[in-house]
Image (cartoon, rainbow, N blue to C red; front, side, top):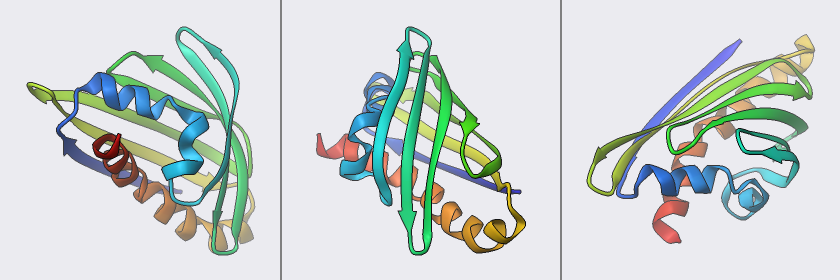
Length: 141
């Protein structure tokens, strides 16, 4: 099993980062390696979404259930995909007027041992790039 933890401080309020993280359909525009993104279901406190990822020989599609705590937290759990386990959490913490700390923690393991050996390092690189992608997106739009 692999674990990725990343954080950054950005001069945007938590509500803005929360909005960007939940704008799943736009991920292919700015998230490295994201080939497609589709919302399967959306309610007031939950989003179920499918993402396609491509990085080197890694080509995967997976679906997560995202439990929403507006402007504070998004907890992701695996619905289906090539993983034995995938869970993560975005945390948004105000750090001053108009700024916040964005944190991502992700734990994952591929279901197949051979796939794990080949693809876990590539998926880790992808996960590690996410915070930077959202910070750059927040500053650009």
